[in-house]
Image (cartoon, rainbow, N blue to C red; front, side, top):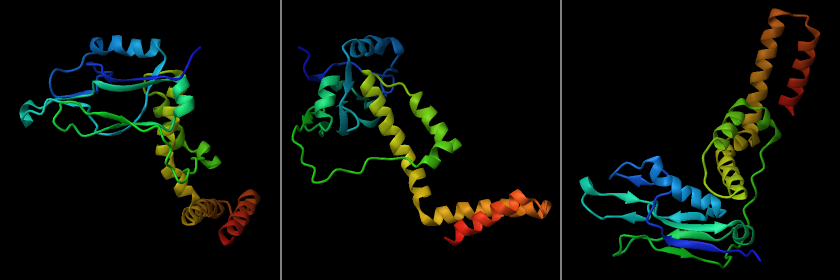
Length: 208
């Protein structure tokens, strides 16, 4: 029977070329085996908080190296049952490694409102570009984890656009800009019935 499980600790290897600062440059050949292992075993990274780097040699500035070699990995069954569990990377203390702390208790007093993009965003070129950029990102892990991570990133980046369209001031500004364009069109074609009707509709919306 397949069960929910996770594995965490010092793997002594990086997962991507961006998991080291200073020291020897990380080559693709250095990460390919670990990436393949994670994908083959159907694992994904737990949501992470705390220290950005899990290992530091604690030397002087010129010789100081930071690595991500301690990992917290979960399978898809763990994710479905315990998606609220976070891996907290604590301060190093006297060690070179950041301790990984897990809390399996839900202490939330409220649930945040889920992000719901406005329909108008789907017609925005900027939103389409954000979707393309997010979906093109390389994320290692099982399929459900990849989709969930990309949706989280997309929601985070699109919240600003959502908020802007949700505000009354922004709505009025958009309507007035549209009205100005229509009225410029009428100035060039004074008896254009389509533009005149559109002007009336926009004036009613602005007044409302």
